[in-house]
Length: 325
Image (cartoon, rainbow, N blue to C red):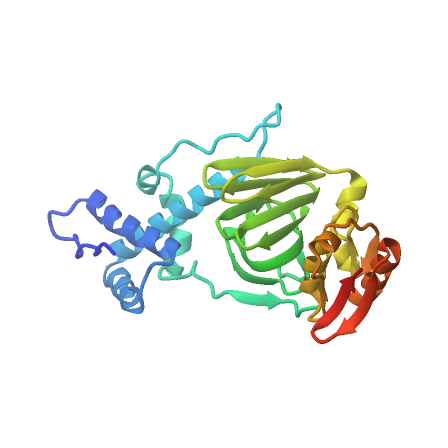
C-alpha cells in the first residue's frame, strides 16, 4: 500500500498540496483500505489543524457527490430510454470548488463516518425469510441465502453472499440502492426484482421498474419482464411473459415451478431446499423432462408425481429418495 506522505502544512505549503493529501485519505477511506494504525494516523492528522479537517471534509464531500452523481446518472434515462452520462468533473477539481459548500456539514464527522458495520441476514435451509429494512424497503431471502447490509447517507449497499433474494426497494433518489453479487453490480432507485447468485453466475429478474446491471465492461438496463443471466464469459438477456415473471417468484410462497426442467435439474433445485436429496443414478432417467408446480418442502411428493408421470419408481433410501426405472 502506498504510504500517505507526511503533513505538507508548512509556511510555504499551498492549499492544493493539502487537498492532495486529504483526497488520498478520502479515497482510501471510501475503499475501506485503512488498517487500525492508519485509522489512528488519520484521526491524529485531521485533529491536528482545522485546515486538515476542512480539507478532508471537502474530499469526503467530493467522493459522496460523485458517487451519487454516477449512480443517479446511470439511472436517469433520456427521452430515447438511454442512460445519461454522469457529470464530466474530476474528484480533484471538485474538491477545490463546489465541495466547500458541503464541507461544513461534514467537519463534525470527519474520521470514518461513512464506514458502517455490516448487518447480516440469512435464511435457513428449507425456509424463506422476509425482513423490513430501515429505509422502508424489504427483502425476502430464499433457502440458504445470505446478505450483508451497509447503509450510509449517500447510498444503500447490499452484498449478496449466496442464494436468491427478492428486493422491494423504497424509492429514494438521493440514496441509490446498490447490490454487489460477486463482480456483478446492480443499481436501482426504487423497484422490485430478484437476484440469484450461483457461484460466479448471477440471474437478475425484474418484476417492476428499471434496473442497471454492470459486470466488468458489460452494462445492461433492464425493464419489467427482463431477465439477465450474467457470467464471466457472457451475458444472456431474456424477455419474460408476465406469467413467467410470476413463476420466478413462486418460491416466496413455498412453491417451485419445474416446467421444462430435466429430472437432474429438478433434483438440484430440491437440493437447495432440503437435506433429503433426490438421487438419480441412470443418466437416461436424469434427462427426462418434468412439468408442474410443487411445494419446496415436499421432495417426496415431487418424486412420486414424477415417477407416476414417467413410469419410474420412487423409494426411500439412505441419504434421500431414489428415482429409477
